[in-house]
Length: 132
Length: 100
Image (cartoon, rainbow over all chains, first blue to last red; front, side, top):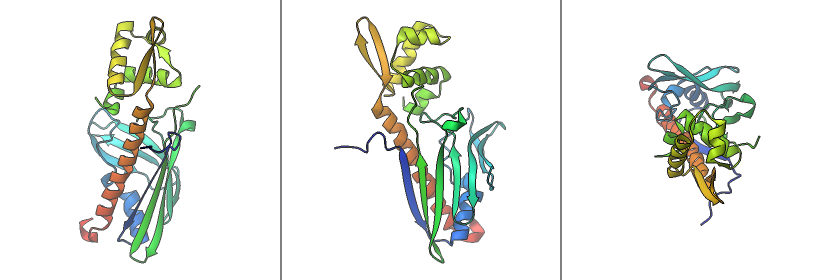
């Protein structure tokens, strides 16, 4: 049995939802708090909410129950209802990447399959550790 | 202990990053970090049990390097993260408007 080659660090997922494209885009960005799995937490405390600022240049961060914040992404492109791109400021070891030039990106595309059905394609690239 | 728990500790993260940059012996790691050699050994033991590093003997030294299988696991976790997120998204977006 062979797995994917170690160099293939892109993760692709897609899902089809029974909702119009505008609603799908809106839910993904404005209700991101209810989408992001809570167990993936880089704060030292429980997450009170995840915030996705809906504009290019916006921040994506988790706020802890004690008020502390952990920003883990920056919105690069915000093009309702078709596409949103944000950086992934998290390195392969699930820590915040301090060198933002090394951050990779996540692109989410929304494609209307019918007026009431939308396909969502997500591509996330996970970088290899770099040799200095 | 899984990879994420093992890397939740800042010292272990530093050790892992140094080992990820290039294979290193315990003594080299202790020289680069503000921790004692026995402490480095203890951290490496945990990283090894989390399948993040492998070791081999070179003469009298024990040299540590990244375990590719462990890294593959971390990648699989990213995959799981997004699959869970998309499943949550589908549930949310398909709810009747007034409940959402």
